[in-house]
Length: 148
Image (tube, rainbow, N blue to C red; front, side, top):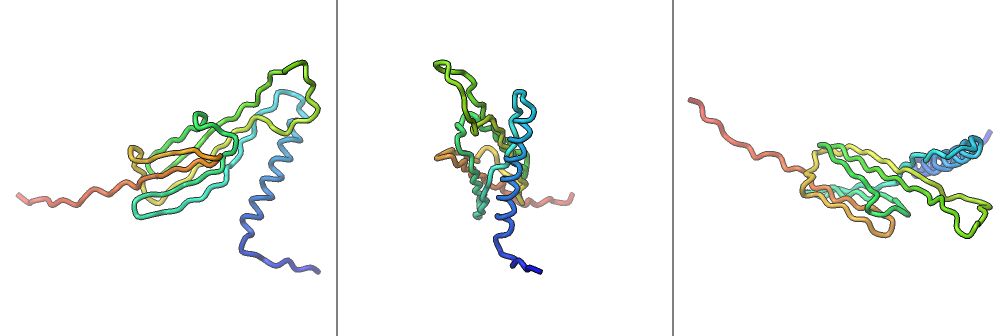
């Protein structure tokens, strides 16, 4: 009997295996279908940090232009979506021998502990990393009510 030690980085390893099998399975199905492949929905890796006034969310989205990213904020829920379409035009009657680059969709949704002020939040894209600075909505200040 073999014992495998548990490590602290097991979730990262598990996520890597999930991506490996998801990508392989999608390629297998697309090759078997011999039809126009449907873009698989991929989940980009993300980091979330918090300060007193904002959340900082960073998502890995290589090969994505900032014009292709759609971000929606509804209270505490943040949705990020994008779609990358592969160019299908042929140049100089070139025959494709092998292709790994394909159309893909990225989608990620997260719920934060407090509501986000959409008007003061900022999104930037640099080097394939989408950075969201999501300003926390400040609670309304307490007011007094006089009894008449």
